[in-house]
Image (cartoon, rainbow, N blue to C red; front, side, top):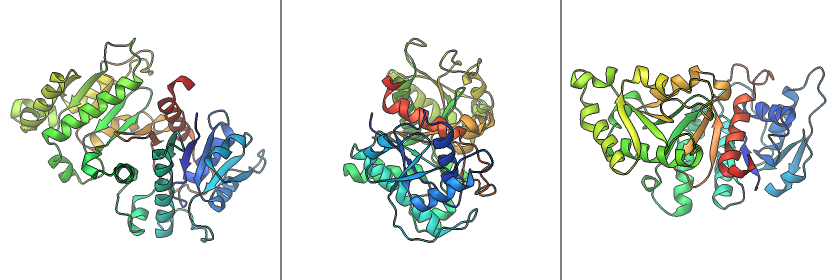
Length: 355
């Protein structure tokens, strides 16, 4: 398959060092991958993960994505996609320069994927304050990638709907709204938004849920209010918005159910044996109404194996289920487990036969 691009992430955070750790410790998983970023930043990151018992990790500058195939195991291939010569930023702090580098790396990788030059992109964590300080118009990866894809295809952002899924071996959740205030998130619980989220979830699951498990993927939809509104006592969104959207999805042949009480639906969807591939829960995914409602349950199960997947893009994008961790950046202590899970998921989605 074509190479997989791993973007730099915020150079002041743990992204570069978990990338280096992944290439050093799991060369079989990183075969055919390369870093879209900055050679100097990755060389510094390779030094962070050194120490007793470890040889210095070589960093190889490559000229094209295809060159990654010729780089030996436990060597870090980097394609310079941001301007060179910038001073290295101080670790663990918000920098406009760091936000710009992170955004530029994502934009380059997105365009390469849209042109078909890479099979997928895996994005290391960026920092939203740094993006804003750099003047980037988008609050995070999802919105930035949506804008790049829409521009590439010559359509409006509204015509390129995307959603955020967070998944691990036990649970998948998809969000109706993403990086907005809670007040705005409540306002986003509209019929079209909920129905669109269910549709995108169903489309994704048809490609990844083994058909031997169910006739078709089964989707649960959470309510917005406590107890899913309790028949209108605690709010009418379930009756007037969410329920009708579920009914419309069912009319399209989607196996969607709800709205269910948000405090119990995630337990029903969780794989009882800890592995949805072999013993799925009652549902294959939960559509949640807003960011924290959907992400807290998955992250509580362990950020080490969580993967962020963007649904609706004309490319494959995954990301670790954690942020820049400024408090430990530069110490070499950060785990690469979630990044490795994101790489495995990207490879599976880009080329299922590879598995």
